[in-house]
Length: 406
Ligand SMILES: Cc1ncc(COP(=O)(O)O)c(C=O)c1O
Image (tube, rainbow, N blue to C red; front, top):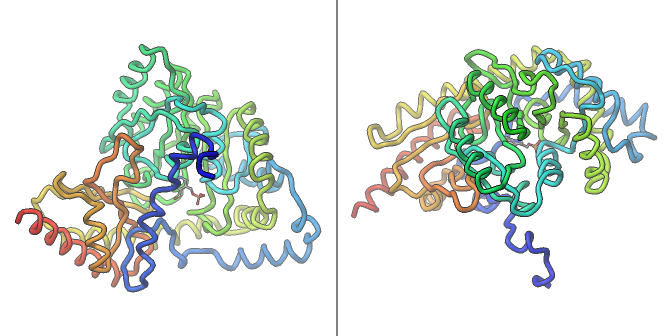
């Protein structure tokens, strides 16, 4: 049967993170590996209330097919919600997706022929790599800097390609508290990315799951808002991290011709997003005290992050070339270790010691993989788990270093 698979599916390996997560099913393992928002901040009250109301009062619509583009009430609620982030769009600029991952899949399907080039940061979100891999692209991956994308490096990559007669299809970035690095792209670089996009007429895909989760520092404008609706940016958003991931609802925003095509593709790949889930999102945006909800989430996560960073300082080996990012928001931080430490090997040792992280290589596309970093999720484990987990992790690194010296 395998010989009949499509060429780009033959080598497609899915979301590589899944391969490591399957080793973490032992409940005694302290996991820093997931990307899970905390159950403690889910707004259960509004979810129950909205679900009950929809099922009681609108069951005939809820149980039916619904519009491909999404529920009008939700789209209008999102349009209003985005205004406070200085994004001013109309219904022609938005489509509801069945989560952020679906939104990225649509981007790949719309723009990419096999071997088309795209520009990405390195590291970058592994789910985006998986979504784009479906189309078998050529990656131009540029190392991130402390203040975000290396825009000059990206420009050099673009020019190099143009000299070879090829033009990249888009630039994919996660400017706010990037998954996996936790890095935030500075204002200056947001403007620079936009200029680069305009100069070469290459759209920016701005993926923004974490924008509301800022714990310190100044709120920065999205690249979408800086573009003033000139059509150079496509935004992908999700309710996963601000409401809950189980709901599987997100939205893509962008120029009308792009949204129209996304709708055609969605019609062919999943048809509609469940109305019940969309109704819950509408109630969340329209009826819930969002300010209080975000304040609560931010307080919860900020405490976890600060505690995590404190314990890292306390337990982690110093002066050994080990560094970690200190994110201003989001759910992740990124630990870089000396090149002689292979974090994929370290991962299996860590599992034995009952602590887990995501080895960094899954956040690089094939051909660019690096093995001296790891992604850490600080938002899910309890305080006790954070202390024990960091202690175990530092021991594992010491053990690995001793073993490889011998
Ligand atoms: C950067 C980024 N984009 C998109 C997603 C997709 O989220 P979901 O499919 O849960 O909406 C995630 C999830 O972790 C993410 O970190």
